[in-house]
Image 1 (cartoon, rainbow, N blue to C red):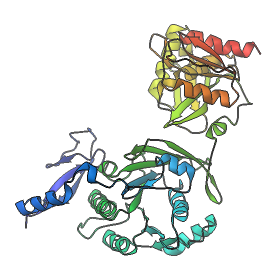
Image 2 (image 1 turned 90 degrees about the vertical axis):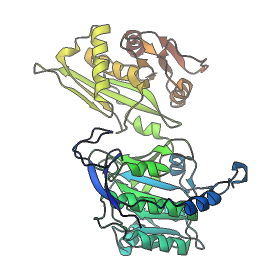
Image 3 (image 1 turned 120 degrees about the horizontal axis):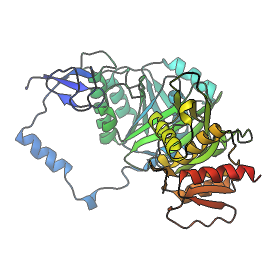
Image 4 (image 1 turned 120 degrees about the vertical axis):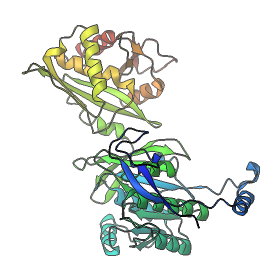
Length: 457
C-alpha cells in the first residue's frame, strides 16, 4: 500500500502546497496554511478499466428525473434554492451563531418529511432533548423527523444508508469527525474529509444533504474554502441579532439561479416575508434631507431600499467617512465626484452613509441615489418623497446605463412612486402611464431633478 504524505492547504482559498510557508502562494493570505495527511489513490490499470466501464455512458441514456427537486414547503427557501432542494445534492448553509440556521432547517425538515419517509436530522452539538425543546417552541410535532446525536461521520453515513431519508441535515460540519483522521473536530483535515464522504453519500444514494457551517469573524465559512467548491449549493443566512429580519442569500447554485429569500424572526420561528420592499421602506413617511430611494436587484427580486446620508461640519482637520451596508471605497469615490463635478465643499464635512434595513449593497446601479442623498444632506434640501433614482455614476459625473431598468421602474410604480430618474442613455422603451420618467445625463442634473421634485410639492 502506498504511504501517506503531508500536504499543506490554505484555509482561505483551498490552495495546496507540498511545503510549508508563511504566506499562501495563491491568495496571499498570511498564516493560513494547515497541515493535513493525504493518502495517494490507487491508479492501477484494473481500477481504471472498471471505473471507465461503470461511469461512461451516452448523455441521451442518462435519466433526467434522478435529480428531481423537492419543495421545502417554504416559498422563500425555495426561491433561494432555485425552486427547491435537488435530490442527490449537497448544500452548505453558513451564518453567524444564533442567526437561526438550525431553526430554519428544522422548519424545512417538518415540511419535507412524511410519516412513511421522515427526514434525518443529525446534531453533534445538541442532544435529542434539546432539539425537542426547540421543536416544541416552533410548534413542530416531529412525527416526520428522525433525530440523532452523533459525532462520527461513518455512523451518520451508515444510519442514512439504512433509513434512506429524503433529506439528511448535519448540524454542523465543524463538530463531526472521521476515524481516518487523527486531528481534532473542526480542523481543516477533518472538515475536508467529512465533506468528501458526505458528498459521496449524496451522489451514490441520491440523498439530499444539508451541512451547517459556522462563519468566522471575517464572514467566511469556517474550515477550508475548498468546501464551498465541493458542494452544489452555498447559502448564507444573514442579518443582525438585534433585528428581526433575515436574508437567505444564495451565492452558488449548480441547479438553478442565484436568488434571495427574506424572513422575519418571530417567537414561533422564521416567517416568510412576501413583500420585502415594504419592510425597507417602513419609515417612508419620516422623510428628511439626506434620504433617497433606489431599487437593487437580488437574484431575480427587486428590492426598494432607502439610502440615508448625513453630512455635518467636521470639528477636526481630517473629515470622517463612514459607510454601513456599502463599500467604503465606493462612497469615497462618489464624494470626490460630487466635489469635483458639482463644486460641493464636502471636504469640510463628516459624511455618514447607511443602507436602511441592514441590507448589503454591491451593485453600482444605486450610485445615483447615494450621491443624491449625500448632496441632499450637505445642501439641507429634501428629495421628493415619491421619486426613485437609478443609475451608475462615472468619474466624469456622467450617468451610465444599468441592467434590469424596467424591473426597477415597475417595482417603484407598484409601491406608489410617481417619478423616477434614469440615465439618459438607458436602453429600452419604458411605458408606465402612472410613472413620470426623467432622463439625466449628469449626476448634477439628476440631483437637481430630485430636489426640484420636493419643491414642486
